[in-house]
Image 1 (cartoon, helix red, strand yellow):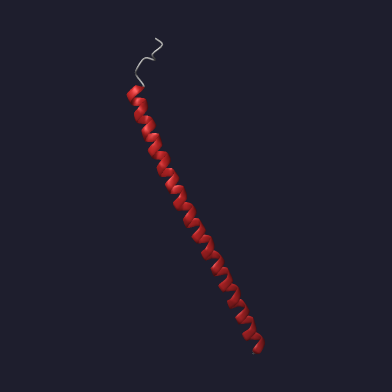
Image 2 (cartoon, rainbow, N blue to C red):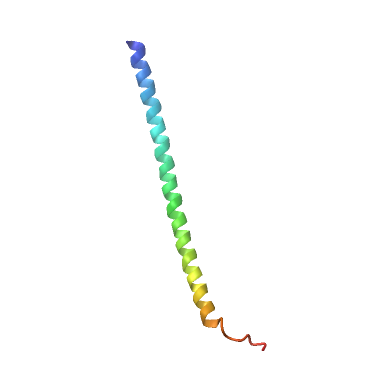
Length: 65
């Protein structure tokens, strides 16, 4: 009976360690996703700005003509 209790306590400790490790990984992934979303928003904004600039000046003749 004592061996069985020790085995169950060992399993419980390993599960706690695994859960903590998974929580840390999920936390890191959430931070990565937030950072990537921020970068994506900046890139989308920049692409839109470049598209607008191209529409404004895209049909004009260059000054050397």
